[in-house]
Image (cartoon, rainbow, N blue to C red; front, side, top):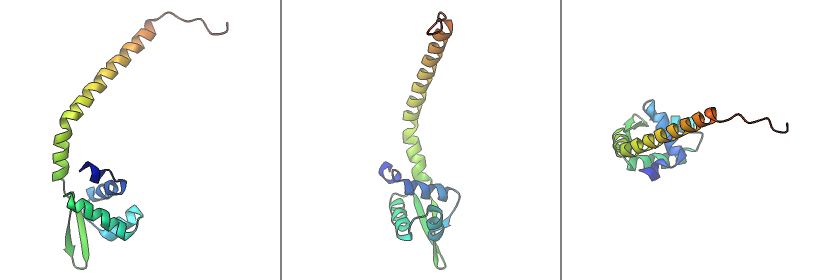
Length: 112
């Protein structure tokens, strides 16, 4: 999943599809890349289960599948909690440094 999501154009496609179902031509216009390139990325996203398509007359419409992203989010949750804890530790440390600086002796101006 991370390998699939590491490609910037695939993430851009998912960002567009977050707003709703879109035909390939719409994705081509929004991304500013060729139709074969968009189709290649859509195939990879479809194989990863991140998008699905349906036919409507002559068009193929793509939409985002949120289930795999929910699974990824659930897997990341313990890591996110660890990261937030570390950020809290850093914030407390920086606050202590600010307090130490505020309580320290005044320095005479340089050069004078």
